[in-house]
Length: 200
Image (cartoon, rainbow, N blue to C red; front, side, top):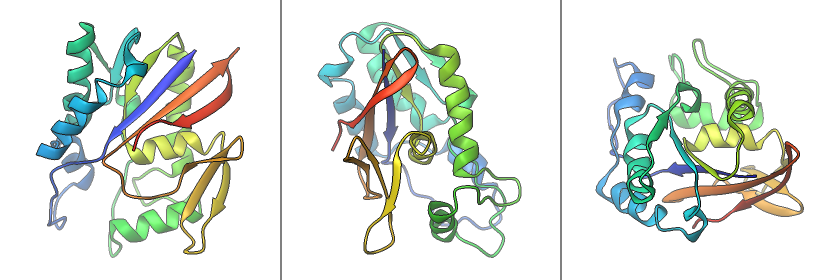
């Protein structure tokens, strides 16, 4: 079985996070023009020619990304709230960069009303265990994917103390900014035997 986890990272930026429900804003935040172009590129990856089902979180950006592959393959998008991004919670005096840095070093760290990377990884894992079948794509989000990968990868840090993940002695995550991320996860008898990053 092959599972593809996809995150389109080019979204419309919101400059003012004060006095708003940050998690709600992230749900309705649309793709940028670059993000729409990313989605058109993603749907043409050769690995997706035989995809049987396309899943998406309820976020606008994920649905907007999934629609291109869904239309090309002429199969519907299956929506699942379990594929949502890592819930932030109440920032208080912190900002997103601070929270990300704390979570990247303490995987159980979470804000009031939020989720840790371990929490979101467990959520994705529980859902994926229910839907495992040959060749499926899940359009989700970068932090959610990171939480999932933590369950299988070797954890390390570079000289700048940025998080690095390895699988089978290959770096699969290095915290660099990317237009989009695609991870191919291969299972054998429900055991992860390979993880490859196949995008930029």
